[in-house]
Length: 220
Image (tube, rainbow, N blue to C red; front, side, top):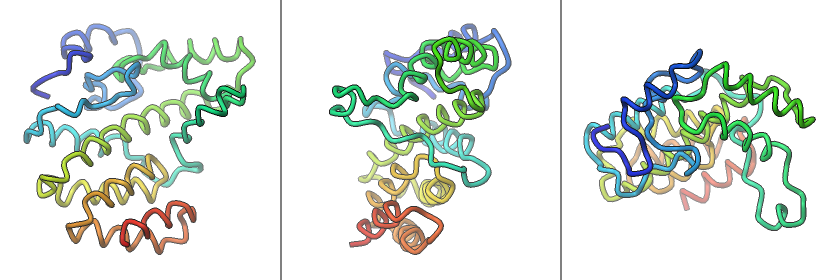
């Protein structure tokens, strides 16, 4: 990417900071300059250049799971009321541990995941399929933010055709970042690729009723 946000890091810094283990994310994803501390958010002012669009497309293609996931990822964020009432789900605490060790995509290594797993085990937290589960979740959070950034480009939707619509439909079908994917299709429903994808998703009995309803609402 030609320009990095002030919260990002240079490519040189990214490569130096993560030279400590076995990478778990694809190279194109590891180049992401935005921090997990800020939710992997792409700043709205990110330049909408051909280079940036190509990078967004490459990240989405790299994070896409090869087959439908057993459970939707990432899990929905708990509402603030539940957190105040002490009903915070366990995974939120696990996420804090993982994020503390892998603040950038370039830091997601097998060694750091092992550190996070050990810390979570020490706290008595669930460590089932730890590395696989949390690598998938990190990929999901990254994909959500790329999809959201693409959704900001409704005034230039032609630059997203047809790749963004095709990837959004695949994400919804495979259970990763599904709501953000449907949201992107709804925002771009002025183009036939998005409308056709929404029709297919609304009729897909393999998806949850909630997701099918979102797709139907996008066609209204």
